Length: 303
Image 1 (cartoon, rainbow, N blue to C red):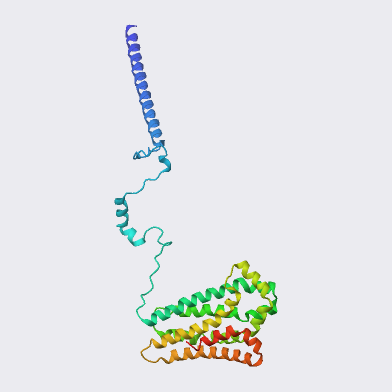
Image 2 (cartoon, rainbow, N blue to C red):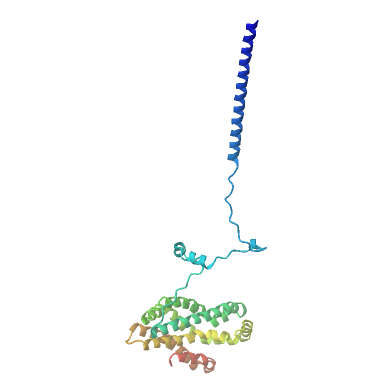
């Protein structure tokens, strides 16, 4: 019995040892599981943002204010190669307009005057077309409007093309280049002859509609009036001849192309004068009514 009890005790001790080992193993597994769970939770936590540099205290409304760069900051940016290569901000909207070449000779000054006065002339033609032509059609009729304006709008449109041709040679300083533009636009100046031949009909249409035209002039506050506007093409012929003669005098030697351009303008003016003289022979009273226009024509041959 004694021997059996000893054997049973040793067996019981063995079971206790096994149980202890089992418990230790379970505890170890639980510790591992806990560590794994903690590790997985740490991975799901997003990284914290980097610390932000504290902003200077700018008062109660600091959120609505902007920190202006210092002079040193601006100098650093402007000296940067990228800034130099790409240009300052808004360069595309504030591109520097290149300065025109400096005029150094007399021809250059005459050419500049020709172009400047041509721009002003075209502006005044446009004013008449815009403010009177359509109004005339609506208020005094097609027939009177045709007699009043004849090919006035054609002179305006072709003069715009002529001005572009002149500007393309504005800074060459070569009078021959300018003279060539007169020859190139010969068809424009031939239309001046047609316009001037219509002056008697234009005067009649103007006098027959004078009251309505006066109302329009008052509405536009046009102190010079339509009559002055319709005379501008005749006056421009005289200006062309004067400037071409000035270009001739500025030359050290004769330029055949310049002589040809001057002859073209003089021919147009002479034909216009002949029309006025013919009116005098056919109807002296109408000639007196057109005397002011006649004087305008003759100016071209007294310059």
